[in-house]
Structures are given as C-alpha cells and as structure tokens.
Image (cartoon, rainbow, N blue to C red; front, side, top):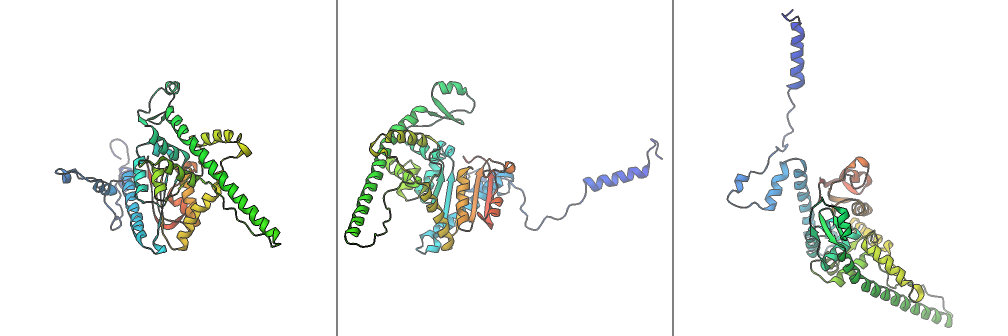
Length: 379
C-alpha cells in the first residue's frame, strides 16, 4: 500500500490505460495524402497575388476553402470540354448547364453571370422569375446597397423593398410594368394573328379537300406559341441593353428556362394583363406553354447521351433551379460533373440541401463524376 492508502498496482494500470487512450500511436497516413498548408504571403511581398494563385493555394487550407478550390478545378475541366465545341463533330459539342436564383441577379454577381452568357461559356440557363425580371429592371433603374439591420416597417411606409442588405425602390417595378405592358400587347397580337393565319390556311385546305372529294389532310398547328424561354428571349431582344443577361442570351441563342415564370413581378403583370385582355374581342389571352420548354430542355440532355457528349452543371443556390437542371441530366444518363454552391443543409431532406452524392442515387449524376458542394453564399 502507498502512504495515501491507494494501491500502487492500480495506479500503474491507470497510467497504462491513460497512455493507451491518450497517447496511443497512430497508423501511417496513406502515401500522397496532402498536407494542410496555407498561403505564404512572403512569396508575394514584391507583387500582387492573382486570383488564380490565391484559389490554388486554398486547395490545402481545409474546410470550405478547399471546397472552393475544388469547385474551380472542376469548372476548369468543364471549360476544357467547351473548348472542344469548336469542332464540327456532334460528339464534341458538350453541354454546360448554369442555374442561379433571383437574389444573385439582384446582387452585383449579375455582371459575372452576364459575362458567362456574353462569351458563350454555357449551353443554357435555368433561373427563377426574379432572375429574369431583376435583370431587366436593372436596365431601367438601379438597386442600392445598404444593411441587413433596419426598420422594415419604415421601409414599407416609404415603399422601399429590401432584399437582404439591398434596397429596391418600388418605382423600379412601376418602371418595369410601364416597359413590359406594351410588349405583352404586341406578343398577344402576334399570337392571335398567327393563330388566325393558321385557321385560314386550315379551312382553305379542308375546303379544297371537300370540293375535290379527297381525304382530309392532317394539318399540324404551326401557329405561334410562346414558351417561357421564347418569352424571355423576346424580353432580351426588346431591352437591347449590353448589361443584360437576357439580352446576351437572346443574341447568342442561349435559352433561359424558367418553369416558375409567374412566381414574381412578371406573374403579377401577366395576371393583370390577362384581366384586361379578356375584355378584348374574342377574350384572347397570352398563352405561355411550359410543356414545350421541358421537352426542349430535356432534349439537350437526351442528345448529349445520344452523341456521347459530356454534361456539366454549375448551380448557384437551391430550390427549383437545382432540381430542374439535375432532373434534366437524368434524362441523358446523368451529368459528368457538378458544382453546387449554396447554404442549405441536408438534414431536412430538401433537394437544396442535398449533396452531389445524393444525385448519384437518382441517376442524375454519374457514379464517379467530378463533383463538389461549397457550403456558402454564392456572391
């Protein structure tokens, strides 16, 4: 026994257990495992560091810095695909889908998105209604930067709308309404004129068939039918402003798909326009066909599989745009690469929160595809 009454043998066992639990020897790290490292700013004391150098150094920083660097690496891979699109071979025309939510167009990131479209870095876009109208509105009036913390009731009294730490005067939407309504009228007139021309042509063919006692021909309805993507292209043509995403999408024949086109100011104006147009002769309304657009979007994916093209997805934000793109990729056997950037978590089972690996289980992303999710806000 020791002087304090404890058992020396027990003390020895405690010490041995302590060493085993706390100071146990680790296994060797697999060969080639990267070591954590940061940016050595002393290497750049005589010159400025480039963005490419900074992102490259983030590779082994850890956490979301590593995810950002990985996203850049994967996007570089997609860029190499697009460079091969210069070939006339159909199997070289690879596809890159870009998705973004409306808040990103409200922010200054709009100019980056516009650059990608202006220089044809993407095949097509999926966005929300806000992603369309905010782009057009910014051609008509500015959005302002402020703070997150404010008196929202006072803003409401002043008819100033808040998007996070951004401010949008309600006059911006009034300017948008003044700009859009005449265009809606022209689009409705074009739709109805095309329909009348087709009906006249159909009746003439039927009359000829009856008078000659020949079988009635099959007459396909080729009259004008608007879809969300052709509607958005028309807005791009009408705004004719080189700061606009929609303008460059129209100019470069890059379709912008928006299955939720009515979920925003555009929807409010379409609803009001429909009420007014019902009072016109024959009660005509502007028809916008979503079905044709989903076929058009899915055809990009199906053709990619048929012609052995690669598919990549860059999706900023979650919700509808994320699901719409990845579900489209399912039609063509799954995307070959994907980069997600959003703040959503997967514990609630939401599509927004799902990591790329979950898309593999659905066949939306190929097994072994290059992919990463950056847990962060895209700006």
